[in-house]
Image (cartoon, rainbow, N blue to C red; front, side):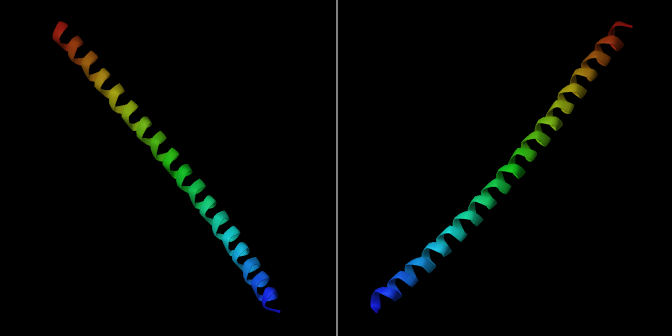
Length: 66
């Protein structure tokens, strides 16, 4: 009979392991999605800063000429 308890304990351990693995993979996916969104937001903001700097350069050069 002790082998039955061993099999039950093994089955419960495997179910728990699969549950934790699935949960961890879902959290990793969520983290990557947030990380990608933050990277895109940062790229957008830095692009806007570059565009503003270029616009200021053009405005200053036009002001110096005329």
